Length: 289
Image (cartoon, rainbow, N blue to C red; front, side, top):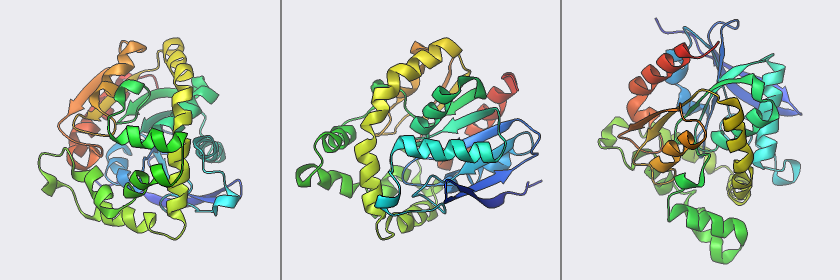
């Protein structure tokens, strides 16, 4: 049986926030937080695969997907701001406790939610969502951090290259042994949204803000040590943005973290949806509701 997935919009701080929702509203909540350069579209197969047992909510961050894309002067486009909007959506939806799945940008947004109220987070699934410097793969992050430190014509070029169709496609197919498993609809969809007038400046602003996430890491690690929150890492081992060392690093502070390295890349859901779904269902089944 295929469970219905609803496509909804909520008004948060004067902005339209699009989200996908499925499952019994009284069931335990799983919040899915997407990364760059995609949207809740990346969870289109995972949502119905979990919704028989969980209330699944997957928002589009501001500036991404079907959510509002206010002008630069009307919204700060920082990870703090994106997390604030996500927290506002969960409050609007009456979500008190939740497990969260984080990927790429979704990770620093999720860490901020956990630091804001640690008792609300019942479990974490991280799929190529970093919390340790060990996970940063060069040369991608050399260029990103150089741009964040000294934004300007000399450092901006590589980051603009990251906004091209070639780069978007690379994120999906690199490291996947059989790229024919990956639908080109993914990068066509994402690129159409990246190419909206003004979106390039939004993405560049978030690239510049990314270094603030590293400043937060000591607090995140302390949160892990204090809470011993159940954590599952399902990780594309061939990702050349967030490498497998980032998955293993969680065991520094969460020795019981469950780690699965998959023969895939940055968007492992596209090639390993069934494997990841099985790991998630087994993991959440062992966690407190």
